[in-house]
Image (cartoon, rainbow, N blue to C red; front, side, top):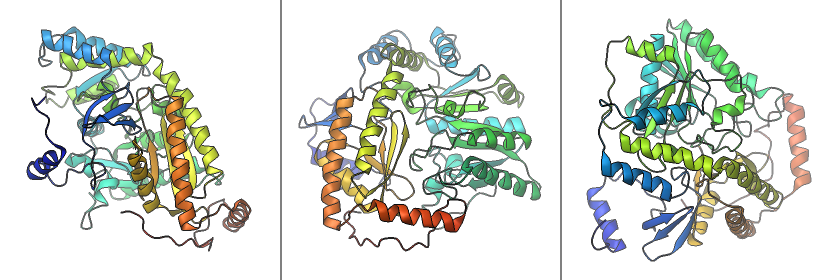
Length: 483
């Protein structure tokens, strides 16, 4: 820590001078300088406290004393690489594996979610001997080159981007605004059939599938919850084609969904991925991550003849911290808290949906919740500017929330798991006031009868319950509030 804290203006100037301009920060027109944090709160240089609804990294709470002590104690004794035997590595692997199905028994410790997903692709390609990867629309899996290639969330931002011939994009299993919606009789099968069609097209080109990769719940894609049985059906198609299934738990693992330790378990006990990747919450802010796979896949990787070595992955300090995080999740029943508080938060938000025409959909599991804002509930016109206005107004009232999704119109709740019902009350009440002011300024009113009639007409016309995008709906004119 510097002997003397810099003035905020000086920090901004030095950042502009020495940090890459593509490295963006929150609230860029008036950034917050955070100097300390504890639990679900962050504090700026003036001592102002902010409620943190963003940080899925500080999983068990910012600067949790048990985690801090575990890292400090181990750092005082030893930190070295994994070419030496050390108990922390094997004990952490054992404890981590105990949270997973028996099939997933072999760990590779690395340093970030990006590194984990990159290694997962290597494992899949070595095991299958194939190159082609199927990913989801709006997916994000990391910042290294191999992952930008499979992250439409990123590569679609580039006007001249060329999609790799080995990467194939399946529709996001979004039952709110996707191709097959909640009114469809079987959206899971229809979305899975899209993957099967992609596999067939790959075979027509004389190639084969290495892997299908998906976040167990899409985060950057807009807090998307896949329909039940979707992953099972996709896994069946992929396995029949000789590929494997990679579940990315980097943002949604470690009990965030409450009812289960891993989000992929929401699909049922009969679904087990071939590879699971994890990061962010694993170290509560300490840079570490992990790839867990089957013995069969791991042995195929070994048979390549290339040794795998990672200088910092699985070092004694990282593993001490990882063990402490697992202990805190269990000791403080943070899964139970995520379930209880997440349900309470969702219930509060559903009540707001009954009041506010800007709220199109509430979705989530545990403390992974999305609020999709729309200007028209029939046409699902994204309320992008309004979502940005909400997060900026919240920031002014000392609550930190973000907006994401392909249209940047989904408010994302992913706070530390120590988040409380009182915190939920506070943020939802502030959202209520902000939306009320916005809707009054825009002249928006909730018309449930009109909406229901139009939805019924759309279902009747489409036959399968898909919304008719040609429906005229109610035209709501709005100015761009903030870009």
